[in-house]
Amino acid sequence: MKNLTFRNGDILPALGLGTWKSEPGEVYNAVLEAIKCGYRHIDCAYIYGNEKEIGKALQKAFSDGLVKRKEIFITSKLWNNAHKQEDVKSALQITLDNLQLDYLDLYLIHWPVAQKLDAVQPKSGSDFLNPQQVPLDETWKAMEELVSEKLCRHIGVANFSMTNLQKLINVADIVPEVNQVELHPCLPQNELVTFCRQRNIMVTAYSPLGSKDRVAAMKSDDDPDLFELESIKEAAKNHAKSPAQILIAWVLNRGISVIPKSTSPDHIKSNLEATEIELSKEEMEAIAQEENGYRFIDGSFWTKDGSPYTMEYLWK
Image 1 (cartoon, rainbow, N blue to C red):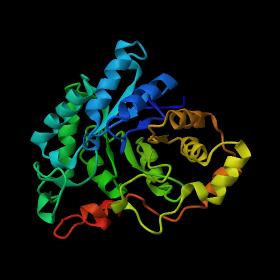
Image 2 (cartoon, one colour; image 1 turned 180 degrees about the horizontal axis):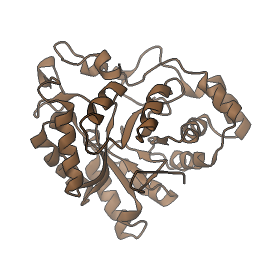
Image 3 (tube, helix red, strand yellow; image 1 turned 120 degrees about the vertical axis):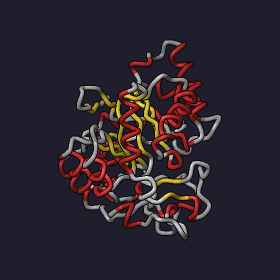
């Protein structure tokens, strides 16, 4: 297993099991299967609605001796409705209770978007709080307090642009340690990755395979099929591997962690095997030519009529 290293020497297993869109009744077995195969990084979030089931799987793994708590890395994320300073700790406590854990290894601000506490899923623009009402630095200061209270070991963000990251860096006692973003050959995030590396911020890639199973409302008629990209097919042929394995290997070969979601035992195993693939310089360069800026998760759902958030705010 490839690893990345935090500033304090802690280890982040570069390949993790993503759990977004993992259905109740499936994620329990998926987590156990992943741990049995050798995964030591599970990526969760409150809004995924499956943390209780993941918690049961983790306890089963601990009690059966498959893994010790200190040997597995658990990430979760603060949802948008708990950005106020007084709400952050209680939101984390709900996640810890769901996962049946005393601490998280990594806690991320899920989006740079704030909603009212009772608006878990905003239905109109009035359900949002604007950045002046709940500044990002207010949320970040509350995140830092979680580290001092030993409720999580590391803190970071997800879906943050360079501009929004810099807002936190300007006021942070703990500079964000991870930025989890959509990343794949069509959206390699080169400028953002360079920005993060210069500040010792790790990058984690989500939707590395194109998120084909996301809800219909998030799909578009012009969605590219990452499995059909010529450079991916060619590399798959060269290495006698699947396109999915090449897509995962491409991220890992860039020194970026990646969290492909799967509930299929075969796919969980084959995704892990991708950690062993070393792509050539020529293959990496060919895949780099696929860049077209396409986002599968473009954040437009935060820009409803009356919302204070815009696409420019999210991605500028």
